[in-house]
Image 1 (tube, rainbow, N blue to C red):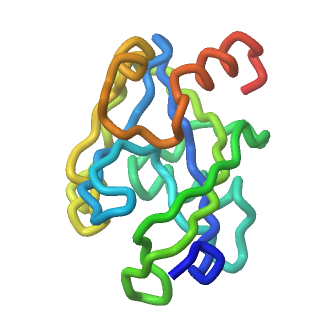
Image 2: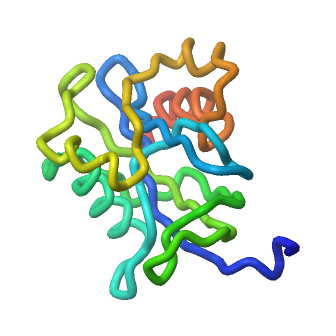
Length: 159
């Protein structure tokens, strides 16, 4: 099946950054094409949402944090093929991820009580990554070029 024949899923995601510019990422062990990878909090846009609202809701659902300001400006739009929950079943789709930046005030802030439900969402674990670790890792990280994107956004003070 070619990419043009795959269903499309729209998603909002939050690049969550702490005071030391570490980035919160979740680890997934998905089937190919994406396979094992690290990704920012986020997920599908619901019928009554825009990308920013979806990103904020997903951050709350996946971290338990309701007090993180998420800048309204998109910093990246990316697309990839992956398995996602569409209409209640796992389906190979083309996902369009719209990224926003959220900043926490606590270094390596721990997740709230929602961390216990991560297994049902396919999240294996989570961790805060330094930009140097992102530069050096051979593991798959989404979005690609995340460390440079955080550097760019931080230098520009746009988010």
